Image 1 (cartoon, helix red, strand yellow):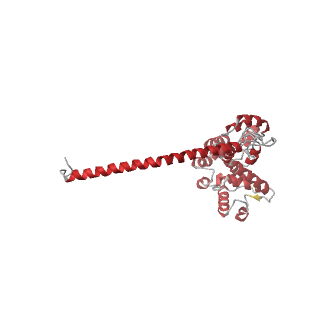
Image 2 (image 1 turned 120 degrees about the horizontal axis):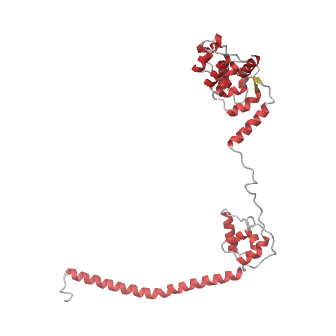
Image 3 (image 1 turned 180 degrees about the vertical axis):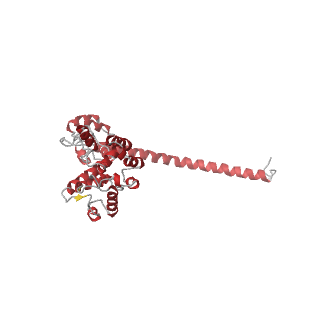
Length: 306
């Protein structure tokens, strides 16, 4: 079939095919001319690199060559230029400095072997010159105090200082006197006085810890400045109403019933019943408001007389 007999679509395809054949031929010719130039440039780069390495090897002394007399050194602190004077290669020194800057350290002379680029022969010859200071062990270090211990230390120091100041009678002190104590403000001083009135007075300084809002640290700090001088008021059960007894901080309904019935019970049975109902801790706090002496001493005295 001739070109003239082809259809319009067939003629267009034939033209495109010819164009593609011509382009392929042109590209092949261009590659043929350019390839030798690329090859020549590659050979020139390789030869330049080999010449540079040969020159570097002639300039840098072998790692085992010593440039100066050996001296004792600490690899954790000796500068890089001083390490070069000892004959270490520049690559070894660079890696050692990078290791130290990253937070690494040497505990033993043989740890130098861990550095990349180290020469085992030179390291062996320099081990006798390595001096690494002994670090203190954890057993020799003073253990830090906890937060609680440090606070208690401060409160004890403050207590020792306050011990030299004038002391205050806790049962006669007014709000002005209480506010002078470190850690006691107007609110706490009002609570102390209100609690003292409900109790009928403090029998001992340790009762101050029962005041709401008064911390243990504050109590330890102010305790040396306080004492109980004026006696507290006693609970006169016979002349007090049930409600008046019940208002006392150390009583409740059951205890108040026992106290009101004490006149009809023997003293020893009354004391044992009261102690069993209250428990040892509450009993020890209440009895100073009922008896001027330890009730068990009184019982022992009565039994001796009989």
